[in-house]
Length: 277
Figure 1: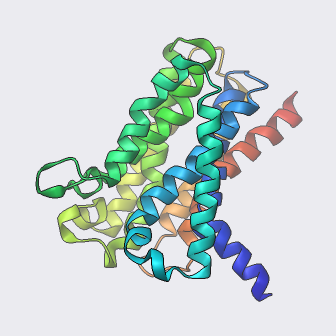
Figure 2 (figure 1 turned 30 degrees about the vertical axis):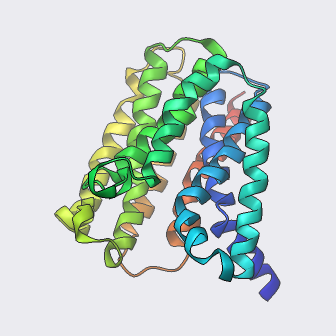
């Protein structure tokens, strides 16, 4: 049992779970736009997500404590280096145009950690914008870059999907901000710090309504029973987890269950496709 717990903790702390969630969102984009056989790009997303997230989470830890790393941290460092090497290999295999589309989001991720502003500030420490930067990176790398990689163009449906994804990511980040209230510096001015927990949930619910109502705005090519029903179901699941969030929560409420919502979303679409086609 302890071995299974250790494996699960490594799966979560090594950012493997969040990488599966991000890769799921990329596949959601491909499925919605009827694009198949993009396994290479999915691998790019998976290994890139592990590399980026562990860089963001553990760069300071590794720098300060590399001589005293625990066995778990040594494993995470090895995993990160391994994934970074595979990511670098894939980067050199993709078209230059895709790399150029990806570059701004990679830069945002780097500057999220590396100080580039006066007083040695990075983007993560700028008041009030943390989750919006994350939402820009996620929506860009799970909708815009995949579609530009395949089609070289962005039409109305893709733009609406990107806006929906941006809203969705902000919403699923709110439980994390509620969880981190006791740890975040007041200068960060996160949403719960500014308006409180209950109003944060109301704010997230309003964004969910906007997320849902954008679906009928799409052109008819995507306006199908699968699109409507899957959006309603994922909205309901997200609303459930949003309102179930408390300041004191179980260890894996956010890091496993909330981060599983994109995986649930993909599974819902796959099941509905099996039922309706």
